[in-house]
Image 1: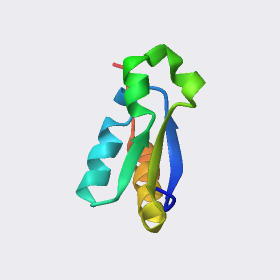
Image 2: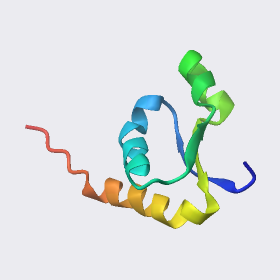
Image 3: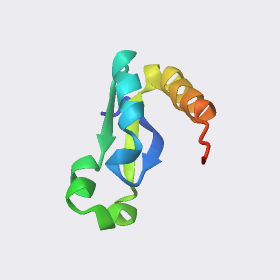
Image 4: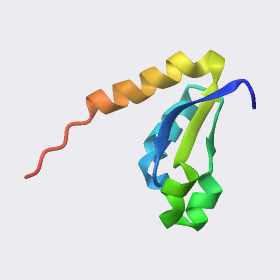
Length: 79
């Protein structure tokens, strides 16, 4: 686990479902720290420091690019 670094934080599991799918498609080594604890105790998310997305140091650049591209591609229109 020492080769993994945190690149993003989330409050709830529903916030990273699409990112998780994209990471799996690119075969990026990752895991979500505190995921189980916050799933059981969702109101304690801030106390645990949120759900931390950790990726292998070798996969960092690709993972950050996936998150950045996803954030830039989202266009929400209220009709």
